[in-house]
Amino acid sequence: MEKPWLKNYPPGVPAEVDTKQYQSLVHLMEESFSKYAERPAFKCMGKVITYRETDALSRRLGAWLQAQGLQKGAKVALMMPNVLQYPVCIAAVLRAGYVVVNVNPLYTPRELEYQLKDSGAEAIVVLENFASTLEQVVARTPVRHVLVATMGDLLGGLKGTLVNFVVRKVKKMVPAYNLPRAVSFKQALAEGGSRTLQPVNVSSDDIAFLQYTGGTTGVSKGAMLLHRNVVANLLQVEAWFQPAIKGRNTQQANIVCALPLYHIFALTVCGLMGMRMGSMNILIPNPRDIPGFIKTLSEQPFHILPAVNTLYNALVNHPDFAKLDFSHLIVANGGGMAVQKAVADKWYSSTRCPLVEGYGLSETSPVATSNPVLATEYSGTIGLPIPNTEIAIRDDDGKDLPLGEPGEICIRGPQVMAGYWNRPDETAKVMTSDGFFKTGDIGIMDERGHTRIVDRKKDMILVSGFNVYPNEVEGVVAMHPGVLEVAAVGVPDEHSGEVVKLFVVKKDPNLTEAQLMDFCREQLTGYKRPKFIEFRTELPKTNVGKILRRELRDKKVA
Image 1: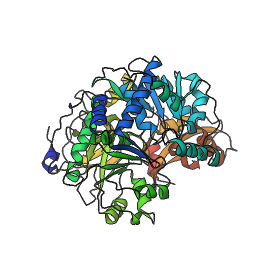
Image 2 (image 1 turned 90 degrees about the vertical axis):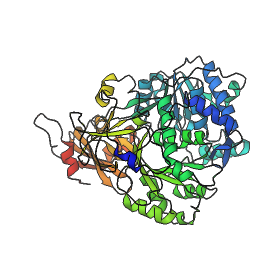
Image 3 (image 1 turned 180 degrees about the vertical axis):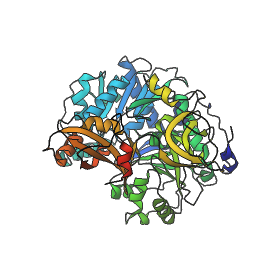
Image 4 (image 1 turned 30 degrees about the vertical axis):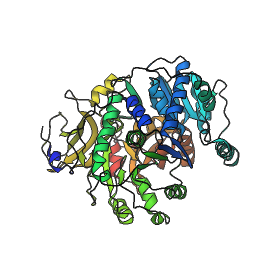
């Protein structure tokens, strides 16, 4: 297979990296705990924990989990924003021989119940702010062990107490909940401290993460990311970053982790790659608080900042952003959604550090392509395949198309998932006989090996880097007794790239937009909720009765 991209690789980036340096993420993390023991590993709300402390805390928590009788391979759900407990939990779960199931803490009860049942999660660690959601569904799930964490758990005595008081009593961010069999995070650490973490033989072919995604269809599925998939991807990304990192006198790179760790982009590029490099991850619990975010950035040098276009746009348009010191910034990489030229240009003029667009999916751990990290001009492409990665542009019959021809972007490499959890039928739809993953995105590769996305084969809506599947939204809205028919499409939005728009045929003539919005608020997490609702007397359909979303979308009516 021709690989035109290799001729255009940046100097210092190899075509192949040794992705078998580690048997598992456990070996990688334990090497870092030893090698960087005294270095700060994670910082949140002014509190820093070192690699040595992360090692000790994760040992204690892992020992507690093992003491509950969970067998190797058990699924443990994590439902938290970016707080210090999150990386500790990831390390603990993996070291104890279990599988991490990342859960969006803003899920509605319906969404949470589905994911816990589908994954078969037997345990969950939840921040108390979201415990009331869990309370509503836990009895109908396989979960038998509940750990409840608080914002202040790892912030230290007086500070932790004060933060918890403010969160609970002043800001009233913790709705009342009743989980009688739950154990506090601190209690689990205390009990685990009197036990020893039993070594588990974790192999490269064991599942590390069940990363939930709609894939190329609307049913949420767990992408099975094996230890070797994720190890490969963080080593691939590290190699791609080398031209920017090399030559900089940076004793320790500080990574800004503003994207949530339950999102695959932050999980790999911030949390895990940061551990591999001995970096300090600066955890941002609420990146929507732009003034607070900028204040955090002002407190220390920052070197690597992965984010989505929406967040970069919010930062560069805030008056205080220009006051920051960008002299240490090495890499700003955009993913999760398309980087807009206006944002990339403004970012570069403000920081003198290029905003580098990449591309990937949950199914590819996630990074598959990236623009060169030293490129200073906006390319409008998703860049070149990273080391060990092949991109094929194929037609509907699976045949490779010549350069310059649009076709489905297909990816092969060591970072590609093992398949969807308990969904061999869905796996078969997206994996080819020669090992390529079919992305559902339509792209064109040029003679330099750069790929430009031109369309989506699937009807997915991309809201600020999060996938929204029309099937799920439509299924929820159709449950409303006043709705006869519904179609969900994405329409352009200057802030989030796209937003959800509903086209609805009423069953109840008295149904109002406000009633339907309230219903969606109860059933769908924020980014999945419609921003616009248009009532119609009928929806366009094929001759067999299938609603033509594309026809509605092409009108781009907002």
